[in-house]
Amino acid sequence: MALMEVSYFSNVLGMNMTMNVIIPQQTSTQIGMTGSAKYQVYPTLYLLHGMSDDHSIWLRRTAIERYVSELGIAVVMPTTHLGWYTDTAYGLKYWQHISEELPQICREFFPRMSSKREETFVAGLSMGGYGAFKLGLGKSETFGAAASLSGALDIATAFIPGEMGEETPFWSGIFGSLEELKGSANDLLHVSSELVKSDRPIPRLFMWCGEQDFLFGQNQRALKHLEKLGLEVTASFTEGDHSWVHWDEQIQVVLNWLLP
Image (tube, rainbow, N blue to C red; front, side, top):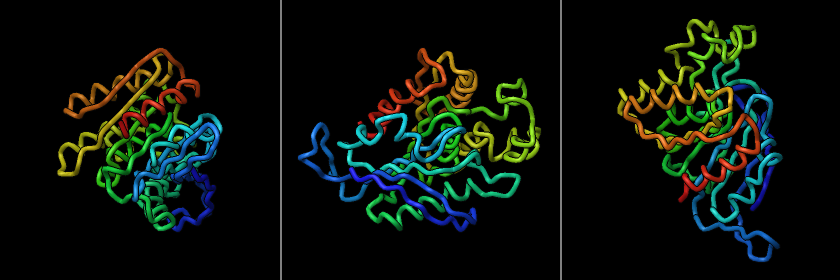
């Protein structure tokens, strides 16, 4: 595999951004690992971070490079700060950047990245799980599959009983008034309902959450809603909390699910 840290300028955000990118490489003499570049055009996984992290975290906390070495896929790990994959109320358009600008930039920089939706995937943890489902459900013409690990999948309801904390300048700066969050473009349950009413393609969906995770209730509510809509979801709830020991295991399950 080839690993690159890429600094680039986002016209949408008006600032420099950073991403780590894994590109397939055919290798045969590396000790302990074999690299594969079996596709002329690479399937691509966008791998999203959580609230406290950045573009480096999947490389630092998991063996993602080793996990994908024989799959022949590219992996894009962008920084998205604390923007919640949202066009924020305070003015920075992280949603437009991650859903439109970033795939275009990646395909310009790396022309062998696939532009087909069925070969373009997204996954993430916690805040990144929210972002992954938002991209899968809200941009299904671009992303053919989305996987959430311990995702914040029902934030519109979660603020009411306080799972996500109280309304603060931080949260209102992201989403605006939390009273208006439910039924908006940032409410995944609403976005999924709108998707099934449209003629847009339906993505493949995967979710995992640990039963001891503080976001477990959100995942259960989201799964019930998605299944009620008739969407097919590969879901798994097992022992586990909100920690990397589980996300490291589950990202391997996600990769097998994406490319069996």
